[in-house]
Length: 292
Image 1 (cartoon, rainbow, N blue to C red):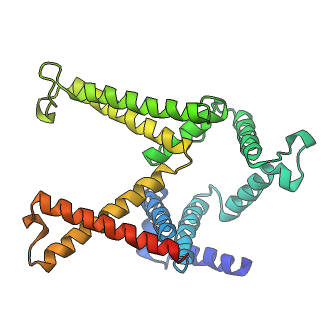
Image 2: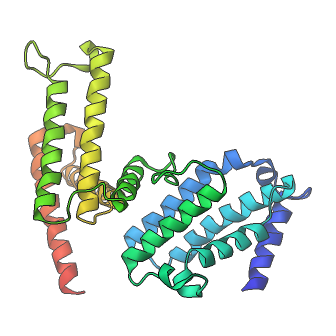
Image 3: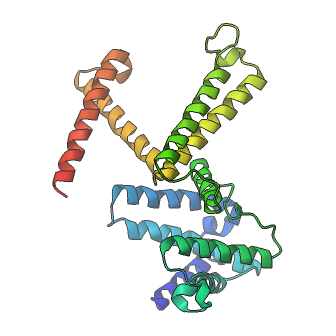
């Protein structure tokens, strides 16, 4: 394996070399950012589809991005791929004292929850040693997808006790918070004078900002519910979007079978076909469960 990895490093250096690929040679850390994100999401799509045959290829594309950035850094004298591997190995050992026996007895966690708490303690110590400000919320990148960032921020705060109790009473409080936020959004949207929904065209900048803020609070409270019931909100929304695509394409297909464009259907016709698509999907999923 080490020989194949070394070959990959050499291939990347050749692609960036004087006789290499013009496109590869012109890339920078900045220009590669969207490709790293794209390749990551392609891995997520493969995982959602459970297409294990394609997974090695897509993971390879993510690894390519690591090699690409490391080669650019090596050319600039910043660091090399060896530095990346060394720092990763050191971090894994340092943050797993219960596995590699590099900590005292009182540092050895006995269950998964304690592992997470110990991991955070070690990261906090690392931040303090580097002189960075210490916060429970440090380490959650601002560039994460918004739902995932909200989820991780809430999870970090929960680890130090800023959370509802995880019982029936706590669940009711979480739901109550969602209802409270929805009511505040409803108030922000409706015109005080007419109690009618105010069109965007006539909404003041201040009111629109309030609507945006209240809508954000609704989403944030829904993410909190997802965390509470152990649902990844990114996965849930991505799967919902995939179902929407399947059902809408069902409508398009039925329209085409009748010789019409989907835009020629009335909303009532579309709605009936939508219900048919839902029933078909439910039947397919149920059949799949029976054969598992």
